[in-house]
Length: 593
Ligand SMILES: Cc1ncc(C[n+]2csc(CCOP(=O)(O)OP(=O)(O)O)c2C)c(N)n1
Ligand SMILES: [Mg+2]
Image (cartoon, rainbow, N blue to C red; front, top):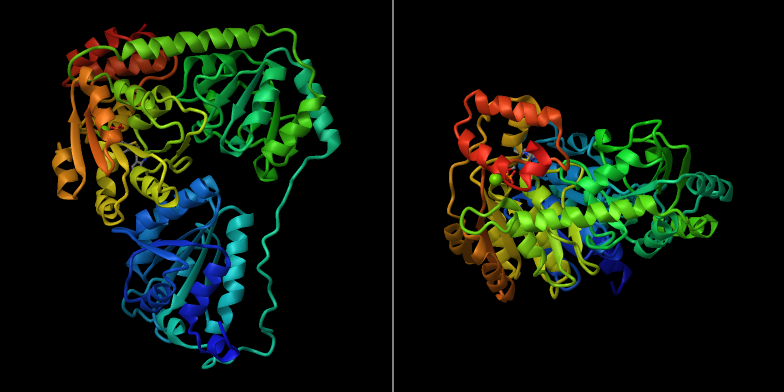
């Protein structure tokens, strides 16, 4: 901006995009529409300083904004037009809300003097977004922009969630000089300086926490996404306490899966040694996690609870804790460490380590069966063995998520992300696109089921448009596998409406201009993945897996086994093939026997 006059000549859309740039937002995911043409023009004029990424469905734009925030730690931004475009954003925005990712959503509104009159695409988006957004405002004039953008960005960052701004089409076009600002609105009254923060609990609480943990003899640690930046501190605390680290899915990359101080995941997609550790521990240290499945935690009263979370509201949310430490995981663990006595008695950890070794051997061997169809875990295991040391991996939602969680080993420099608490299908591809755009030189993999992949299949066009060398693995079982097994195992019902119309994903990939590969036989799996990972462009690998191996809990549950038996007897068509799968590992150990 050279002169005051030029600054004043800017229209509302230009003021808004300049404010985004000032807030260090470098990417906007979205789709044009007649409610945001002014904003699109302002973005076009500033293309060297801020990048617009065109998507095929606004839901993807919101997922990408959320994923951008998760991968980069910065604000993710998405843009959609009035009415339907804005409505489409919602699912991805809820993903951000639930996983606490800072996202700014921008939408258009009808002309300011036609809004709320049943005019075309007249949806009251600020009201619609009231639940998903921590902050949702209608931009009243160009003079209003700087203040609301600043507040939206502050809110997204400090409350770690969604902020929403909706701008009428005529406000996008009106210039600052056309519209008088009110006398009270002193220009430049807000500052844009981001401030660092370092949250630490009180010393007395750290002392109490250490005392409880020192007094316990079998400490288990639950680590989630809040622990992602605290690996060294977490390992040091685990080592001192002889405590196995149990990982919630969002914390998969906290420590490598083959590290001797972790037993892997927890929950329905977790491991038996993690479950054993939770069943036997007498103290639980929760670090940056609100893993939602309460039934997998130690029983209340069984273990003393200590919890570290940056958000006081979440202390004691899932498990009763005696000491809550409100602070950043890294700083808090570092402050806790010198207060801990290294435990001489290390039997609990050693037992967990034995369990983890056995578990990993069981899973590794169980997917060795040659021929077709492949055991479900095979594709994830063979993928994990081949990923680049710094790969970025996006998961989807379904049985496939559990396969990735269990069989694909996270390594030290890798990162894993996906829709966590919302657990939405369709998220892997947008997450992968956001990853590859932010990190063009890293290997990026999307791992999804056939149901989830079809939901936002259109984004294969986006992969092609931006020439993103993403590797996509589609786990094909022609079924909404997760739900099929839930219907049978949770309720004892015959599966209903979970079978999917078969799709040829290789042809689909080719139709979108990607390379398509199919793997059906276990002995080809490694070679096909090698081929895909070596290819310097985008590839989709369709992996045809055995649809009859059930979703497997980490340990046999009498109720699941009984229900499954009942479902088979009540007329499940594939009952013989399922019975056969139950007789083989890993189902024999985890469900049948
Ligand atoms: C948007 C959305 N709709 C529905 C669900 C419920 N759901 C969870 S897993 C699942 C099945 C997923 O099928 P697929 O993607 O083929 O994966 P699979 O379980 O077969 O590996 C469904 C329908 C969901 N999580 N998200
Ligand atoms: Mg499926």
